[in-house]
Length: 377
Image (cartoon, rainbow, N blue to C red; front, top):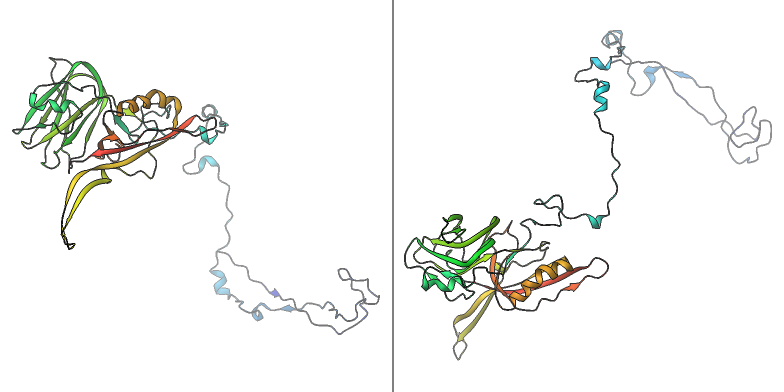
């Protein structure tokens, strides 16, 4: 480090005597010298010769001794270094310059035209297949009234939750056959007690009346909530086999078909159906008001699903058939299979579906689906 110390000049001013005549001095905005001061009440300071003050008399100054000066390194004269000699530098050849693409001027895109990301179909986020954050609904049971290998379990092939396949031993199987080959991508089970008995069910399919069965899923549910198995692709199926390991297990409903995938997710504020208990009960009390107990007469789930910004064309083509079917029959619904695969319900509508138009040129509609769900706690 180099330090240069020299004498310091200190500027001092003193008040001159009050005077009305200023000789040989021109002030900013004041009359020339030799004239009468237009403001005699103002004191004018005359310049004074500055005197030199030794550095040693300046406050906080420090005079270095000759020995200390010797310890100060002389300044270095930095030489210019060619870029080719710098570490990690690289000089591009003319050929390499030709490989650098010219920058593009990207056009501005209006925000309403930017669709939400879709990891399954990045080329067109608004076209299927839709991600698992969108609800799946299985309402068209292609195995309805199918032929069941065990006559006592025939009720599993309809929508009635009371008629069930009740096992009489461990590791039993039943086969449900359709009257023709069916294309499916989802298999659902409802009205079961597998969670309560720690049961495991293995689901297998066969492409014909004689083809070998191929296992598609093995499920050990933690609760008695409905089960929805989403297949990775559409399958042509003629028979479905269920194998259960628990002798005390029961299964009341089997659906298989093509699940309807909603084009928009369910936005914030939704009440998950498996958390919305709906319980009817009768209280018992004595004549003098003593609590005697309560009897549950009916229990289930209740919620409402809301979708917004659905195109009117999609609703008419895809959701109107669901509305017609659910006028009579229940359905399976998973509101967000990616995060909550266990929050599936076997449910039926409790009110009409009345879509409302958002107006303007968008042609979007909003609608609700109010339901009651089956509970077997």
